[in-house]
Each structure stands twice: as C-alpha cells, then as structure tokens.
Image 1 (tube, rainbow, N blue to C red):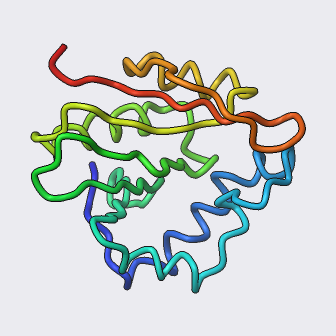
Image 2: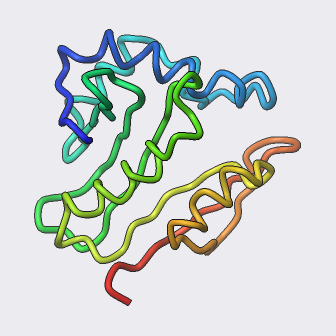
Length: 154
C-alpha cells in the first residue's frame, strides 16, 4: 500500500533509500546515485513543486519508497525513484507500488522514468509493467541511462 510521505518521514525513508541503491552505487560509483544522498538534500526534495514521496507499507512496516513528480491535473508524470529495502525484495511490493501509483494519478496518460541500461533486471522490471525504451543517454564510462515511457489506456 502506498502512503503519502511528509518531511517528518525523511529520517525513516532515507536509510531505506540508501540500502535500496547501495549495490548500484558499489557497481557504478555515480555521483547521482540515491545511495549517497544526504539528509539535507533528501529533505529539500519534499519542498519541490509537485514532488511527492510515498512510503510502500506492508503489514505496518515501511518496505520501500517511491518519488514522483506530477503537476496537478497533468497528463504526464515522472517516476523519479522507486526503491525496495533489500530485505523485502522479490515479494511483488515494487510491482504493486507502481500499479498503485498509476491509479493515484488518473489524469496521467504517460509515465516517464529512467534506469540503468546495464542492469537487465531493472529494465525487465519496467518492461514487465508495460514501459518501453524511448532513448538512451551515456551517464559515465560503463553506465548508460535508458529513458522509458508507458502510455496508460492504450
């Protein structure tokens, strides 16, 4: 279940984000990896226009988080981040959270996100949800970002 997060949830969510993205950071050591985000920067995102965090909650326990940017009544949304605590992976929480998120924004017809092209598990996760690659951009040596989109209702 998705629960809207507030700034007061930041200290609970940031360690989950760090754990969720630690393995990717160990592989790529990229400067934008969510595993190295500071608390101050993480907290600052809560004040960004149209930026919303959600806690992914299962049986009263926060197992992950989602960040999205969607303007009110917009027809396009940006999936900024989804992270599942490694202890809770493989149980369908990420898949369900993505579907729940889509239903929270009924005006959004096109969702866009990006992920690491060299991570077939991540690319397959999004493809399974109906996302298709639309462009690829190099991030750094050995790491490319693939942008993906999903059209709702088509």
